[in-house]
Amino acid sequence: MSTDPVYRHLDEHLDEHVQLLREFVQQPSVSVSGEGVADCAELVAEHYRMLGCQEVEVVPTDAFPVVWAYYDAGAPVTLVNYSMYDERPVGDASAWTHDPYGATIEPRGDLPAVMYGRGALVPKGPDIAWLSALRAIKEGAGELPVNIAFLAEGSEIIGSPGYTAVIDRYAERLRGVDGCLYVRAGQNAAGELPVFLGYKAFFTLELKATGRAWGRGPVEDAAHSATRTIVDSPALRLVQALATLFTPDGDIGVPAWTTSLLPAQVPAAERELVDELIRRFPDKQWNTAIPGLATSGLRVYAHDLTGDEVLTRYLYGSSLNIQGVYSGYTGPGSRTYTIPHEATALLDARLLTPQSTDEVIAGLREHLDEAGFPDVQLTVKGAYPASSTPPDAPLVRSFLDAAGRAGGRPVVWPRSGGGGPWSIFNHRFGAPVVFGTGIGTGGNPGGVDEYLVLDGGGKQPGLPEMQRFCVDLITDFAARKGNR
Image (cartoon, helix red, strand yellow):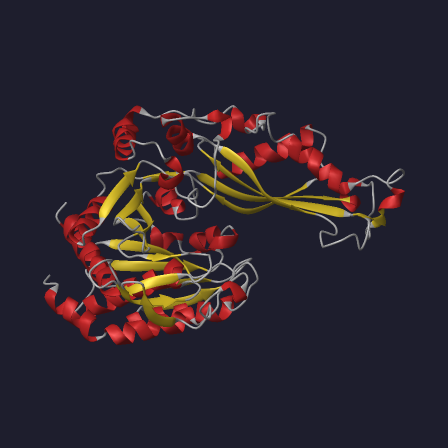
């Protein structure tokens, strides 16, 4: 397939694609609060109709809708496109120098044009680049070279509740898919972009202690704390339950988990990839290399880890984390003194284990019961398996080649410290997964003045380069799979 007419179509319709992105960014989709999410689901569905998908359905879940769509090109190769359309809250709007939902376009430093707005970089800009590239292939080449099943969720930021149920609903349609792909603008200032080949099992969990379930302490409402000498505390009950989940040094203390966790060491099959990462970061400045640490100000690693041990523990360790605890009055001053009648903790776990997600959850419930906390309620908000993709998988090779042709510098990681619902497509259907990376740049995802580069003036890739990368990736993958 010649890509020249496809590129021409992209160039001729660039203004239209920018306008689509503006409309997308101007539509809030904040899953933490629910603001605009339902309306955004309908907008995503319309994007799939514009592509020409023969099936488009907005599927309700326990949280926010998942948009299912299917494009049947009559091709021998099928991709599933995991996607998300929810975004993080704006936060303090007064701290922004641009309207968070204005989709303002203007220069930034020596970059001719960037778009400011919540979701411009993650996830909406890359999604428009991807979909406009697919439309251009149809218009310029006559048809897509692959079939694509789309599953776009609106609850990723809150743990993806309900996504598994939608995959179950379309399981027969997903059998035999040749890969799972989700592109983002993943490059840093040096042009590097990470490619993660594996993910840990990921759980989002809620524990709640209440006076009603415990049979002790306040039941209907808070009691005055002056009565604490004679009234038990559900908040303390929760804290005591949480303490049983950890060892004194902060590691996982749930016996049903610890007996099955894989050791935090490099498997022989992945030694070469890890050694390459170590060579790439010889100064061991892991705060800048490991995702999620750059702005933390971290000075000392857990267990006083140093050198290569930091990378090994990040890649192959398992963790249980307390995201937050809430109970009673937490406002300013001392307006009220209470013994709260309930307390809630939100936790997440990232595990390398042969146990199924059901076994992991059952092990936690068993531990709480045996530790004397059968009344502490356990709610599973998300439970997703681990996954692993070989570096020579056709989808990986096509991604690396397309990124290289676009001037990107892919950095291959054997696995990520995180995990999520995309791993289901590998675990259940055997599909290689390339998730959350791609050509393109921007800044401040989830922060103040989030932006996506539209025109980098030759210094950074912009929207046209993102689109061409998507074209190259799809055409290369179809050809590579067709020749196997």
